[in-house]
Image (cartoon, rainbow, N blue to C red; front, top):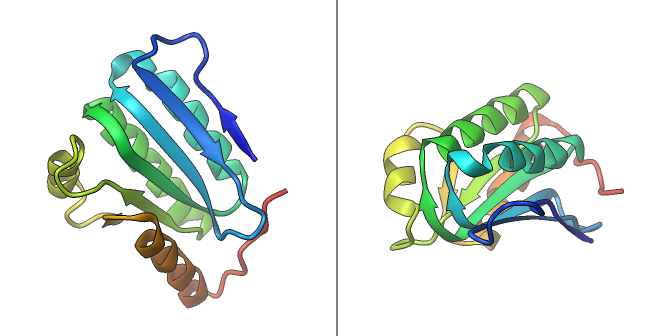
Length: 138
């Protein structure tokens, strides 16, 4: 199941939430420019993902710009997943528009991965290490 969260914004941004009944994470796939104009929709997408009770994988592979609004939203979601003892990972392929900013910003923070399989494995391992049974999507 997937939900497109963005609707009344310019076509420069889209947030899609992907839920899989067999996955250990909810994927929030973002595309376009992440800036101040999309802050509310970005927060809504991440809040919706948090409410699933699974780890969150934020996929920035299709982003063309990633500003401080995006960093703040990721930091807020990462803190909340830590509080809830679920996992948090970000996918940003090397050479992509977001990777340089994230390499600097996430140096000591949540995991930054090149692809989904590596990120999902890290989320599974973190959940197992914490002794948390992953909730299954509804």
